[in-house]
Length: 333
Image (cartoon, rainbow, N blue to C red; front, side, top):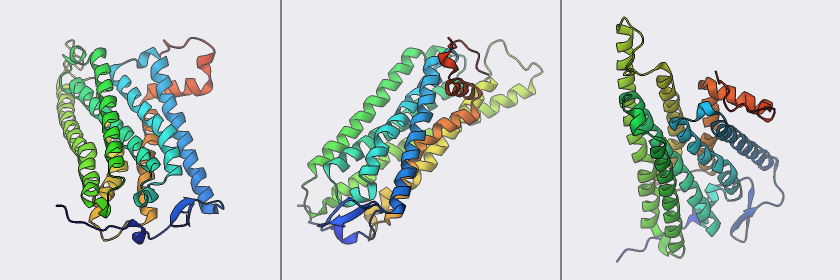
């Protein structure tokens, strides 16, 4: 029989979220928000708007411009959809049900918030995995790339990524609802959620992704040296990787690196939180949580900074030129 462990979260609250107040032992949104609270929510709303607009630009660009209809860009499109949903759904949920308070009072809405957050973060990671597979074949097996990575394969990758993400999110929601009435603090369940969950949905995929990109960079560097050492800088067989392919791989590796930087601190904190004597300060938890969500805002800026054709597409869309004529076949420089 499992020993009963008392783990009272109410006794370990060290601070109150600036936008909440204590009312009969329950935290509720304050009716008289402070300047800090108003400033915080304005800042978070601004992040949400930027996230939505930036990812909409990516989605419209890939849909509209014929030049961007490539397997890699369709995977980027899927990633942008996940980031867009973060801006539309997760940002408002996180503002209404902050992570630090959901650690202490796990209401149904908090569990739904966590489930949606896990689903979309899993979708981002799995889309990054698919992108790494696409880049692996583009760089390491250029002769068979178009044969293996067809549009049909890309569609299957996207459907599997989103299907698995939904299953993961629903599984966490069902497990959370079953443990809602668990007595004694549910220490074993909490350890499983905080340790096994991040291990399967973050750490393991990140290790695999890092290994794949290391392999890609080694092959890309070898091929670049091979090109420099030959007298003919162009090959008719297409066996060497083009400059555009290497640049695309470098840019997507930066996307992966930013993702790791944004998510690792939060996952480490979330993993080791049950092993500490008390909770992390509210400011630390909230800052790390919003750092993870800001990743969805950063990706479109990475594309715009490193991809000249995305920059051109963004300028055409923002200027409204797409409403003045058919520019789908425009040459994006």
